Image 1 (cartoon, rainbow, N blue to C red):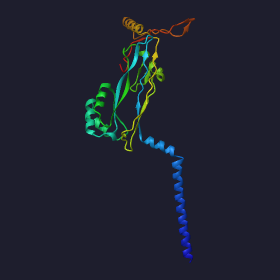
Image 2 (cartoon, helix red, strand yellow; image 1 turned 90 degrees about the horizontal axis):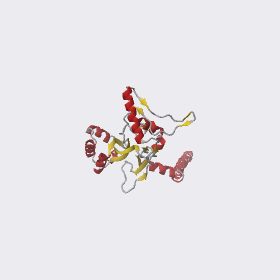
Image 3 (spheres, one colour; image 1 turned 60 degrees about the vertical axis):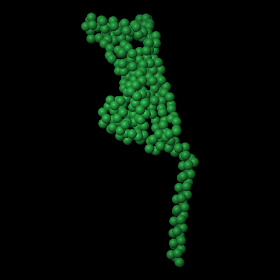
Image 4 (cartoon, one colour; image 1 turned 45 degrees about the horizontal axis):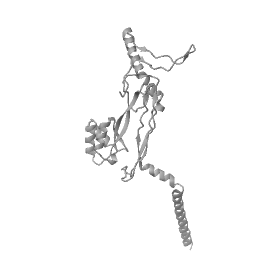
Length: 273
């Protein structure tokens, strides 16, 4: 009799424990579905969205008359998305040929399992357009910008130059970086769990904002003449260099106007020319 009573109590305890666990799970599920639904929805969306940056055009630098001293050339960045490639050998063949790369180098990058693998940057736009025409699944051609100085060394020590990422390094390019750089945009692509883009779903696009134009007091013609004169003086005097930049500020109650030319010699060849 005692054993039967003991067994009944044991069964009741197990039953109540099971009910408590089930109720706890149901309560947790309800909490997640009702109170944390927005959080987990955003987390799920983030896992199924791929971001691709759209580079902003860097602002131009112009002289006092609007003559462009620094501008941009459109170039392309070629990348591959491993999970979207359908014909791997064809992709390797085309990219190796058009980008003038060793097939083994391209193969190593194409076979790498990553969300997006960059193959080559600073590709001429005409080459990028040609690769785009092949319409190869998994190959992405994104436009980028490379700094270009139409007059090569003119005012190079004033303007400075940018690096490979188009960010200012020295001169006015770095001094006014925050005004010139602009704001990059974004392409958001919806994918499945394998990272493959879903058909029939439009891309979300955030357009880039170009950088501001920087206008200088320098006059192109006067600057050119000043540099020619500086070179001539340096050669005649057999000097190591010449600095013909006017002083700025106020001395002995004399106010100096903004300079129409500012040069040192020798100059240097800017990157991107």
